[in-house]
Image (cartoon, rainbow, N blue to C red; front, side):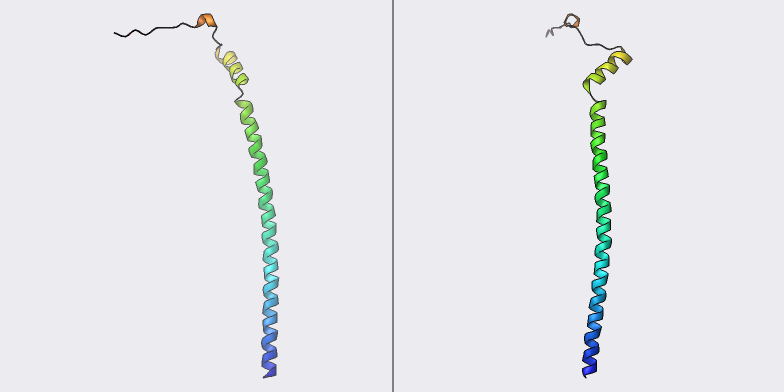
Length: 90
């Protein structure tokens, strides 16, 4: 009877230790995966910030006005170029 109790206790300790080792293994693996995902997130955040800066540069009002002037021959109207029309109702 003592031998059976000892073997049961021994088996419970071995199973518990195996579970602890496996749990630690999973913890380390998931921690490495978490670090990799955080690094990817950081890189994506940096890329997003760069894209926002690039968008800001491309949509700069002075740049758009310069392109409209150079490429399309457009220019700002002078006050004398503006004609006001009155609508008459019948």
